[in-house]
Image (cartoon, rainbow, N blue to C red):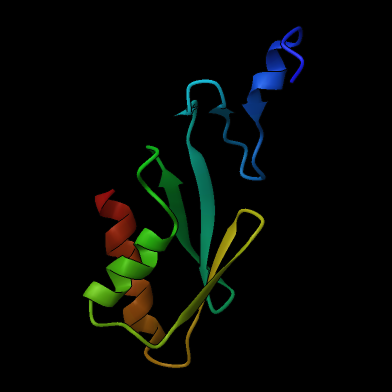
Length: 99
């Protein structure tokens, strides 16, 4: 690693966040747009190093919602379901408003 350039110590993820590789510290927040069946529902912001996108899935499962799949495409977190879309969207709205 070339230490002459201060930017050599940073990793630049697709979502725009930076990680200080020397100290392993997240320098700013990563934000993702969340969609349910191609409809925008809200933003999930990872505010600390312990948060991850799969927290959204965990929350839905705790709410009793199990029949869905999720994937990450760039900065879009896409949740697909064939069942009770309105209940899933309502649960996510509560989740995003409480964060």
